Length: 219
Image 1 (cartoon, helix red, strand yellow):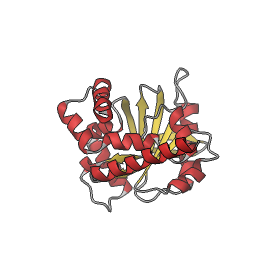
Image 2 (cartoon, one colour; image 1 turned 45 degrees about the vertical axis):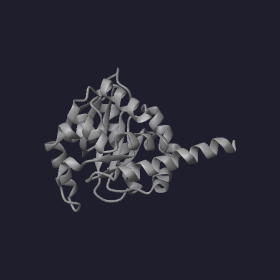
Image 3 (spheres, helix red, strand yellow; image 1 turned 120 degrees about the horizontal axis):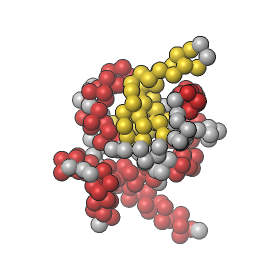
Image 4 (cartoon, one colour; image 1 turned 90 degrees about the vertical axis):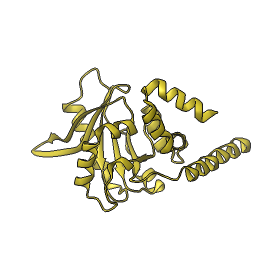
């Protein structure tokens, strides 16, 4: 019943078509959303609270139809070709601003892989794409992008920019350590190029719920 109510509310908010709703159910969006809210890393949870918990730990990009050995350039271009489906996956409040978006710091030019604007958060959102496992040095690069956006691009009435590092995989403990001293709202998420087994997502969610209940009982 909780899952049904979740999708009903999502349909109202996102105005899903029947086809879009079916896709979200098949991709285990409910389970992925709930698991993202129960992140075991406190620093990540705090960052998500600051941005309204709209970002997921895992995104399913099965619609890209690219090989597992795809390059970052090809991944980016495939997302642009499938922009409508990508926005459906990340949320319809996102508006595309540009790819390889140039920001200048000193005498150097830097290029943000994908830049969006989020209507609900009233802020710019920079996506950094990585085809391998998350590395701590990625955080510094995204922080540079966010500072440049806030100083040169953000309008006075808008909120501070947000960064999303989208990787093929991540170690939650490494992510927590990497973000623990970072003051900027930067999230690290995984992407999957194939649909995730929904039974596995349901099992993992059940384990998280039982763990949370055990912790509450212990208190």
